[in-house]
Amino acid sequence: MIKGIVIVNNSGKPRLTKFYQNVSGEDRQQSVIRRIFQQVSTRPDNFCNYLEGSVPEWGENIKLIYRHYATLYFVFAVDSQESDLGILDLIQVFVEALDKRFENVCELDLIFHSDRVHYILDEIVMGGMVLETNINSILQAIHDQEKMHTDSMRKAGPSDSLDAISTKLGAGRNW
Image 1 (spheres, rainbow, N blue to C red):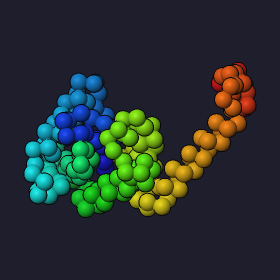
Image 2: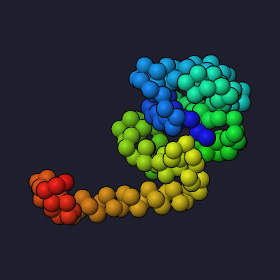
Image 3: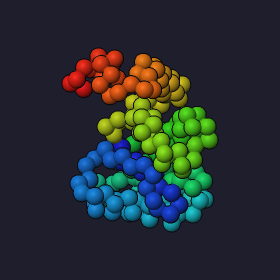
Image 4: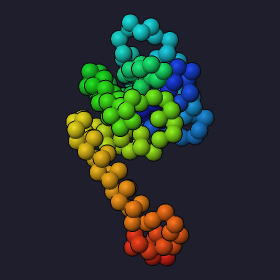
């Protein structure tokens, strides 16, 4: 099972975090992110991309599987049941989906379009379980969601008030 996904830049600033096993409290979450970053950032680039990590909040036998692209570390914390190569492939699928969606994804895309990044991730992993690994299916789901968003915005019109928009979408005043 995937315990958490962390994307951090080379300075250790988190750009995306998603915990599938509860880590209560902001201080403990920051501690987990710091600990993960310290473990992967100190490794030379010619070392393998997975290591037995120590994340006390998730127990023992946690593996940190990661890829370092330009200025970002994509880190998946998983239990010992997960395949190292399978997770590396999953990271590659996630990065490819981001790259196709944002045309050469960069750190700023993760910052300014975090909602879309989370949507893409949710198409691939939900609740710590892998849902989809086929890049074409993921891209089709992203395209369908964006089409629905565009269609709903077209129905609303640029000058409509909130009440008018909710009425057009069928929500009435209870929206």
